[in-house]
Length: 436
Length: 127
Image 1: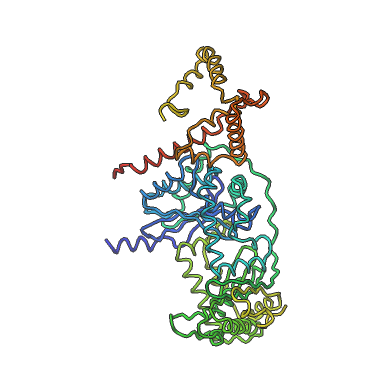
Image 2: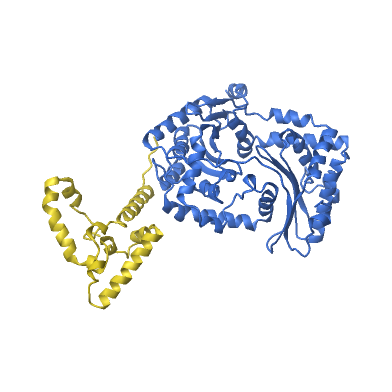
């Protein structure tokens, strides 16, 4: 019996095929035989597309509130009775609504997601009573967390508009947000079927597409079609760069050193570069053998970040620590490592190690639900096969000269530098070897 | 709130019948004018008993403009009451201006409270 079930699960397809539902939404799902299922609806309603500051953040907190079919309380209580978890997460490009539940409950949870797409109410009192308090506390938490704040500032410096908009609505922004703004952002995202993707795990693509189709058409019939305002064009992303130093007395001091790129061809190489620059050891408490790690003093926690978007990528290293002088040494070592990579000083073994590490991080990230949505969502929206195989092969093909060329292009551009903490001790950008 | 403005009422039934509303409309208009709140510059929903959690919650849902106007009407009416005088006739509220600005919000809150009660006391049966 056990053997039979293993054979069945092994014979299932390990990748997701994209199917266009009749309403035009892209649907993709993968069933690895896991005991629970999840469905994620991905909307192009990230902070990049918001007409006013903070609207996307408010929309992400408005998910699972009252719709034409059930109230906010009803959604929560019914989901609790089914034992499922509803969540929403916002990135700079996408808003993801996720329902995780036991197998067999998919009809109810797909209906909840579809009702948010087709008939949300966006009532004024829910905005002031439930949404804005949550928005305020999330933004306050984000400002208190120095690494998050540093990455927010880094995006603003690197991309200015579009991708540079903050994910969080600060208290100045929320005063201007009305329920109509939120409704408009939602209507924009939903009215264009090519900007909605439905991703499932633990459910077959065909049954998910069918369930979603019936649920959406049922809600559409009952709700009146909203007037879609004319869309503000989203400009193509350009990389600018810059430096910012922010005083903060809370938490560890933080430095971000990074560069941006708008060349999509170099993304696999940037994966390898980020893995090469990552000073985190593979084993806890061990010393990493990465060349950067030797230059980073003890007590400084450093990790590399790679943030790929549809038309730009931000790559860099975040350093955290309590000692400003040690942070300065660590940041110097990071800048040195960037320059060494640009100068072609990456050894053959180091390159092989970086390539293996980048491939593993990408492949292992897809196993988790968040990583699955983050990696496959943009591909499904484009209608491509949901698979990281292409990127993995791209990373495998990275050569030493290719790496040094991409790193050289990065280093030639203006760096993005953010320092948060005690400004008496933290260095300026030119003091750690960054140009301009 | 058995006898308050939110209590049981025959008004919807009267309104649904053309004959009944033809009979009762003049009487009700006469009675509303006689009760005198319009002479103090108030509208009917200003008389709702507000010392209740649901009406308090409904009051927070007014638009800023409605909340401001309500406060203004109360101040004007208190002053008129202190002077033991009605407002000048130009400031009386016309029957057309006497709209139920608060009642829909109160009904919505009552509906939410009822729904919460239903969910709090629900008996779940496993199929």
